[in-house]
Image (cartoon, rainbow, N blue to C red):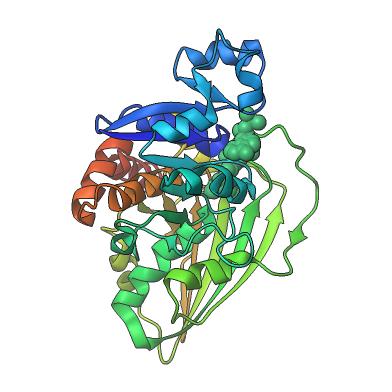
Length: 344
Ligand SMILES: NC(=O)c1ccc[n+]([C@@H]2O[C@H](COP(=O)([O-])OP(=O)(O)OC[C@H]3O[C@@H](n4cnc5c(N)ncnc54)[C@H](OP(=O)(O)O)[C@@H]3O)[C@@H](O)[C@H]2O)c1
């Protein structure tokens, strides 16, 4: 049994927690809560052991299992799922002094003074490189999605590809967030996604622009792939993705909300599909250019990615076996079949 602690219980942490409680190879030590009240604690403590900062342990002693520091010291691995930027101080104050390996989320820094890790993981590209490492960032939802589409194209068409230009249309907030969704289309002067993807696909000529739009549903990416000569046919492109894990090919969705609402209607846990969805009705091949559009389940996509990553890091398991295990836990192949039928 691998003992895992989840430090941060927001949109990502809560999904990690519900997935890991179902994994019989993992003993979930518990979750961290930083902002608490008795009401919240009452609900949480029925499901998990809850750990809080040391200064709150005494106040909530009847409802919590101890301090975050104690939970980290008991664990074999920490899944850090705190607000963007919290990972660095957690690493310096807790994980590093105690020698505990940790997985960080995509909002953390890969370079500079506050870098938390030496690699960004994408299960489609560098799963095996994670084996035995101490600190790794799981790429963000946008970065994970780009890797899932780019890598199969690179493997199939290699040097025939000249460059990738990607426009990320990003949701403003998640469905569970209480923050206001502003009526604006906001651009990003320096999208981190470009350098993040280059961390695991260094040789690709990749150019990324990102726009945040007033939506809570999903991200949508338009990837323009330029070939040196005539681009492959639409059927050749779709063939590449038919059997891809966590990539569905849909034909009749009209927007990101259709996919999200269908996942909720079908009772998928947390309303997640846990994958990217290529919209083949707007996949265009024009001369030397392929335009591929896919929606990206922002909250769900990275949860199986974290699960795969921990199997590489801690269990040193071969990728095919890890995929089987993760698929069993998240029912990704089954969800893919269902969505492809629903949007056939
Ligand atoms: N949301 C997404 O779609 C998404 C997708 C991919 C990756 N990510 C990345 O995942 C990370 C978490 O995002 P999120 O959306 O889950 O954020 P979130 O919903 O804002 O949750 C962040 C959580 O961090 C907790 N926290 C506060 N101080 C902390 C500390 N020092 N250490 C650890 N946790 C602390 C907060 O706990 P309290 O509630 O108790 O205050 C809060 O629940 C970010 O790096 C983000 O970029 C997010």
